[in-house]
Image (cartoon, rainbow, N blue to C red):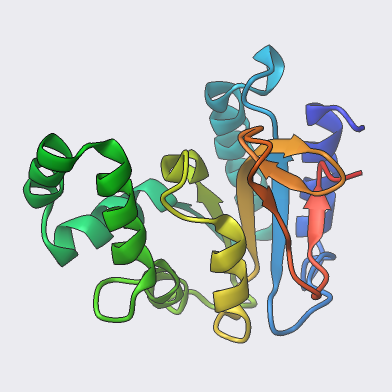
Length: 199
């Protein structure tokens, strides 16, 4: 398994190509950068700092706009635009956390509410494929069960054009395992997505 530093080096090298070297699938110009937040040298704060530094360097080297988009911000937006945060908290007080988490899953998944793929596709549509790069951060917000990242990737097929990297907190067990929750392996479907940290 490559070190965190080596994974960032490989990603940076691939992102300097036009189009980025990982964009082999025109329906999903997407890559996943896996890191293990339980390791001291791959902690959430360490990785966030490296992401920011990478964005700055790439902007200087390529002249492209490198945009950090927090999935946590979309998570809270979906809740607020559905029934509101206070309604969710009230439901948790009355029925418990598992019920509240299931309600969040409904907000993020069901067409009548604010599906996360729709929110994300709208955000990404603002960027130019040849001039911009997008880094998706804060994916840990979905823990433990409010949303499966594999669902997001499947539902974005054919809907985005800008090269995008998802920074994924998890372990590699032959497939992606979100935050090391062993009952939550993430099948990535039949399409090919470059996974940095899936060696």
